[in-house]
Picture 1 (cartoon, one colour):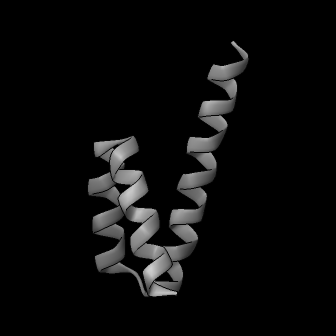
Picture 2: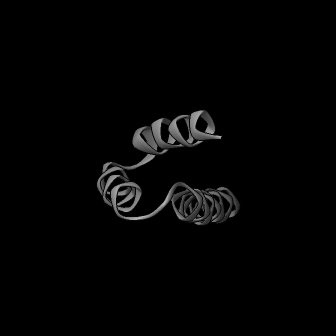
Length: 56
């Protein structure tokens, strides 16, 4: 839903200000569906980064 996208965006904003600008641009240029897919991909990348830093 749109609310879930907004919630994901606010979480990403806390993680990384560079992500904030790229996601904002993406959400303006893509449909909600594509924006949601993009956000899921970014969240997955952020999660992988956290997992690898936790291991090391």
